[in-house]
Image (cartoon, rainbow, N blue to C red):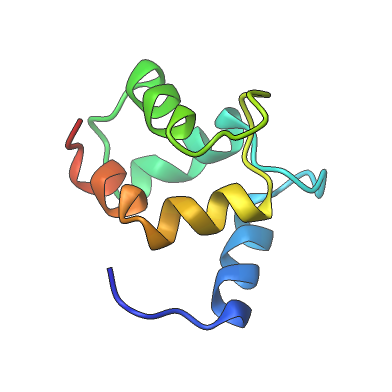
Length: 82
């Protein structure tokens, strides 16, 4: 999982939050993921997001994104382990 500074996580979040809404929508994540994993589908991605989606809105705010990264779920998405 590694260690990340808050600045690194904030920059990554900002990069993925393409519409600057303050949350990462599954479509924004889907647009980026083929670069890292071209086999993951939308249903699998939703399952991963549900693991950290504390307010059940289907999006990831910064705290949920941080949890996704720090809990290693981001790595699982890239490696496609459910």
